[in-house]
Image 1 (cartoon, protein in one colour):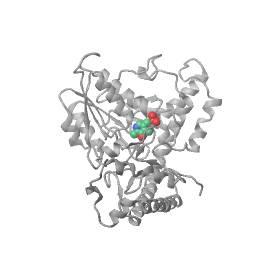
Image 2 (cartoon, protein in one colour; image 1 turned 180 degrees about the vertical axis):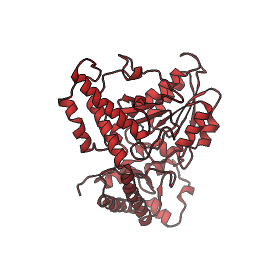
Image 3 (cartoon, rainbow, N blue to C red; image 1 turned 90 degrees about the vertical axis):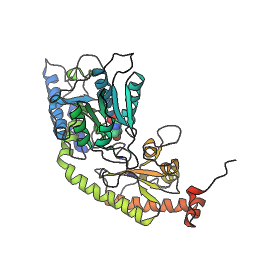
Image 4 (cartoon, rainbow, N blue to C red; image 1 turned 60 degrees about the horizontal axis):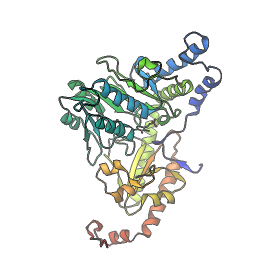
Length: 410
Ligand SMILES: *Cc1c(COP(=O)(O)O)cnc(C)c1O
């Protein structure tokens, strides 16, 4: 077993060597511009792109003409959300009452920020609060819809806690009311079976680097029939991708994206069963060895490979320091300079304390049982060590309810 161990697959994944192999010729031999229609170099590149389009479409039950290539899920989300809002706006830019959008407070920033911008630009946004289990239901969405609702954007599975929303149900509600439905499926697609027809999805974002493909390439599914969905382009310049996303295509990246999708289609079933067993072992062992250990979010409606666990009476950053051999994420938004507690965990109702004492562990294609066993031991040891230094943990063991302590603040 090699150290450190990678348990941060929800952040990004290692590119599958088979994907790299598929990409390589497109750097060196098949280097044409896929938009060059008048020579063999262009045709060969285009052939690679179109195969990838079929592979991507096939993974989600779509048609190849419904796939728009982007630079990643962030761009896909921006194109879907801003593109639909601008296309279906009820009043022009600069006026209020341009239309109503429904989303949720624990979405990825790549959904929250475009929605916030639209709010500043005259759209009304309803920010659903999923409550303690982190699940957005079809009823919640139905209850939020208005006469002037033009777009609903709800993620398929949450990137911090792995909870799974009722996408087919939400999609059915939107379809019935004639509202465009977008889902950020970055953590779902490639890991779990997806069928945009059966699941009533109109727009769906995903990303190469979360499914063992290359970074910097993503896709947006845009429904073409029943109903046809139209988007306002966000990048102009040549009219590539049916006018929705201009720019010379990243041919090797797209070929790699397609290959990654094909491997996921092939191996998803066995992979998810294997990872589910490992994740359950991880959670169950940690919970049985220690007290005040909580898995965050709904108990069952969750991705097989991802868990988010709070360890009471330890501070997440110190815990991370104590488990240096395990690469994972903490419940603090350590991407920002200030150590803010995760807005997702706070959205579930966790206090700052518990949010800060959380770890996100996400397994992947190369995770082994040996690594999981190592992680269990290492986390157990680190938590015990930190708790041994914690006067609050002593009080807790003496039966004091520390939530009832009145601290002197001066
Ligand atoms: C990673 C992630 C994104 C951003 O994807 P990029 O391809 O890195 O832009 C968006 N949404 C979710 C849910 C993610 O997990």
